[in-house]
Amino acid sequence: MGFLKKRPRRLRQNETIRNQLAETRLSISDFIYPIFVSETIDQPEPIESMPGINRLPVNSLSREVENLSKLGILSVILFGIPAKKDPTGSESLKNDGVVQRAIKEIKSANNNLLVVTDVCLCEYTDHGHCGIIKNETVDNDKTIELLARQALTHAEAGADIVAPSDMMDGRVGVIRNVLDQAGMEKVSIMAYSAKYCSAFYGPFRDAAGSTPQFGDRKSYQMDHSNAREAMKEIALDIEEGADIVMVKPALAYLDIINRAKEKFDVPIAAYNVSGEYSMVKLAAQQGIADEKQLALEILTSIKRAGADIIISYHAPKVAEWLK
Image 1: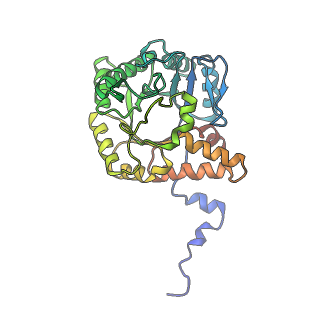
Image 2: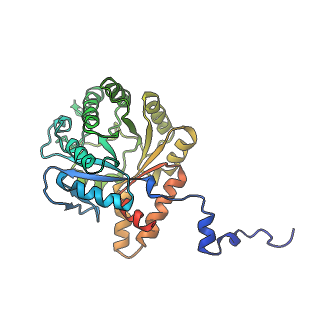
Image 3: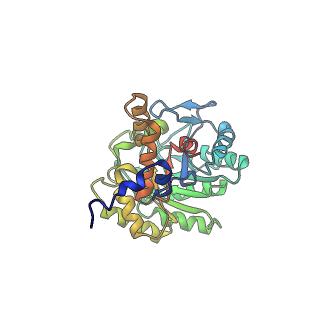
């Protein structure tokens, strides 16, 4: 064998050959774009901790949907910010609640857009936790009753997919039963199955006003040290009827995404969360990184790890970059 007959660099000589042989390809159809909908505003309101992202009033959603559709973004996930919060998150259960009205507004503007809804109580409770508090902890079984009712109102308003993000045990099965009994068997469930208690959520909590007013979420969200536990959580959600399972956050949990992809024969979603997004934007603003290159490298790594769906605030920019 002669000297250097094997030269991998031959296949990296120029952009054309690199693109042709790329093993992982991003497409805008991979993405779901998160939208914050607020009852307390009548004009788009910038979120200081998330440059380029706004809270939106319901009446601006038709314009937002039109702009997203022009970019080729086919899916959104909605997060509601109510005018009033209380200990039980009762505003989340109303047929005319902020998310319920947002679904109808979007569907009336573009019925082809896939609408996913976050199912949780943290944006609606005055204490900021994801469920009903009893003895200073979240009561699992009382909480899932409310989550199922919330999911049903979303489905009745026209949601295509409901996405429980609370991490209560057994909530997927209860939601599936309630939906099916109401004749909503066509509505899919995308479960936040491996949702870690993470420091990457800070900007989201600022955007949604959902910071816990006492304690933390470590008793119900996952410990970042654990991987095998994530596989157990995912398996349970699939057994209970989840159609899609999610790993959240994405960037620090690429190994979990990859394990899930190898182990389970269901679509895997990954949430490129607010902290991951804001770090890229702030690095770009400080001139220490190129926003496009850094974002695309991160997002490609998420897909390379095995994600079929990527939820990301970068989606509109990605649509422009991939043209």
